[in-house]
Length: 193
Image (cartoon, rainbow, N blue to C red; front, top):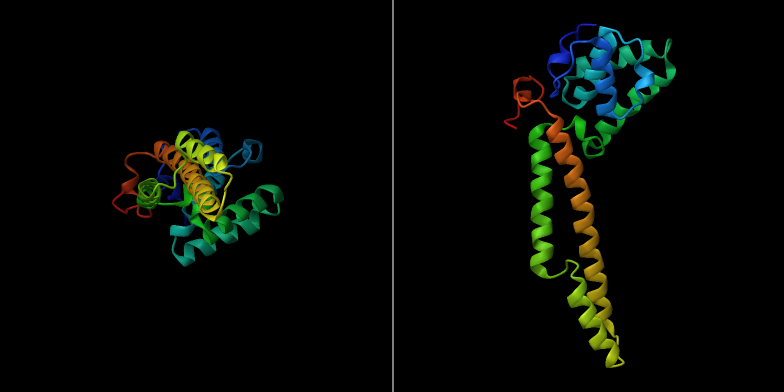
């Protein structure tokens, strides 16, 4: 396999020790460390290839797939896990933040912030006190009509979106904190991030 330099192109500072590097990469992509016991430099490189998969040219993706096929003969479980990770990242990088460039992560965080700002400006974010006052007022009048139901639905929807965006933002920010500040030196992650 000619992909020997991939370990220097991932946006993470990896330990020099091969086993420690494999364990860190397993943690990053979300697989059990016991699957990478007795790691070799080739396995570390393959794990790096999985992280970089969506950014690799077709011929290098092909080589990763060949390596995964060869791995199936000695470790079917690990090969299946890694293949699943490459497929998930290919279908939707949002499923696997480690497969995104730093710029992509920052763009998604910014987009979520813009959406949250608009929801709050439009008044659809959850404000328990004002909503409770509005609910009591309508209930006292004996009329909880369409406007109240619409307000309730919009408030719940706005709150749900803000909550989901906050969860996604925390996950993406945690990924950014894991990144090596010099990741821009990578030929696969050179995106100005």
